[in-house]
Length: 588
Image (cartoon, rainbow, N blue to C red; front, side, top):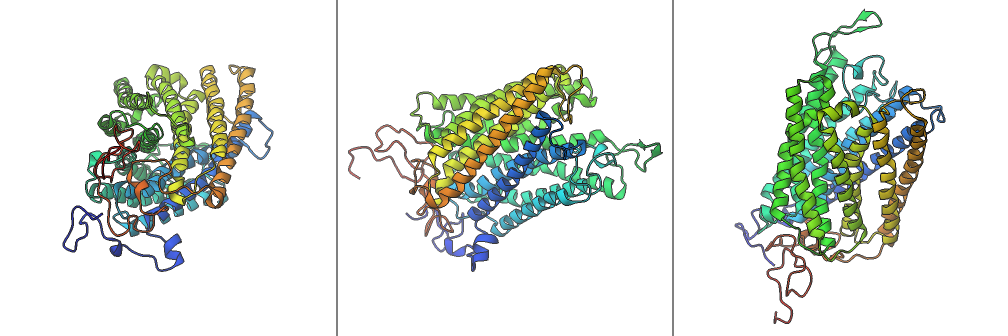
């Protein structure tokens, strides 16, 4: 097959030919300092999963203290706050953002669009190494004098840089430097994603023929490019407050009877900057998850996605609305009630396009030929979990309900269901789905089933009871709650139960890790298209795809990505690069 649109030498003007790509000249440039987006994706995902396992261990230590206070004598109040801070920041930024955009984004965008690689391969390589440097700087804070910061993952001033806060000396400095590096690295990768989507699609790949996975990652990248600068500015300004004594966020403060050098700053300004990034960050993680789940459901239900254009516009609408809801995180900050009314209203409005997506997923499943593969189980589990988490978000989006619940375990439960459990279920589903393309091997389905059921049921056993604890008034971020008169003894028993389940669910991830590594050599051969999928990444000449992805010529795209169960077609799917369905019995 030749390119439909050719340049002066017969090549596609949209993308360089294979000979124009940078080709590695050694093992180092092929696998370490690689400019191949597929290798960079594996580097991103591997690094993110490694730091994610660190966050898992930190969560075990947190639950050990909450479930069995005093049992771990090495966890004091200072260490507890440091554990909470590092766990939260690693999970939200260094794991979830990096896996969805750096991992899935790098691997899938070129393949799904029919491109040979990202538009700026060298910049793409730099983005990973700066991300790795950011992770190493973050990890270095564990070994710095005073340990990592214990200011909470939101890093609110003035406490973040005052002497009474754990990690006030080096911990907060390393945290802020790490965030600055992370944003710099992401910006390099983000520019790649946006330009590749807009400029490097294969012939025939219009915007409305792109898979929803690409739409989700593309929209999330645009959000991140607009939202991360607010966090960057906040981090730089707080770093100046800490190191140079400026007062961007620091008001006049008296500490131990002595007035500090600060004066005139606004802590609320930092909250606005942080949450202007922080709420779009929810959708920077959620939108790629929405896209991936759409592709998993359509493929494993053998049915075209219901309302494709509606799904695309819902993704775009969610992205736009996510910038006008940030202050619902700040209802207890003393804002004007009229602002509270505005942000409560926009918070409820953003539920509309999100609900459209849920309806469309359910209607896609309706009367589909559903195959309960491991990826499909994780996709369905995501829908259920995101729906449950979203319903509790409707409570917290209302000012009068949020104020009494804002500092309780109810918020922890809601946030983890929406921002923790739901996207991690999608990560697992995506890894089970695309692992055959990456490695040429299938993951073990029986181990996958064990991993899924322990993870899914265990997550509900952990976070559903936290809603009850929050309604009881059990506060979050407390080192221990013993002695609080309003907390009944049943809450302590429930905390112990939650901790035991958390240990089991954490251990189940070792099953997944074993499956991941064991299947590299011993997994069943996958073939080129084991799921019989329609999208371009499954139509590459080789599996795993070679450098340049497509061999001598790019694919030509003739149709949208969800032609499943087409009447009269010999198979129950028609790939995007197949010219026309060949009807059964017809002469080719």
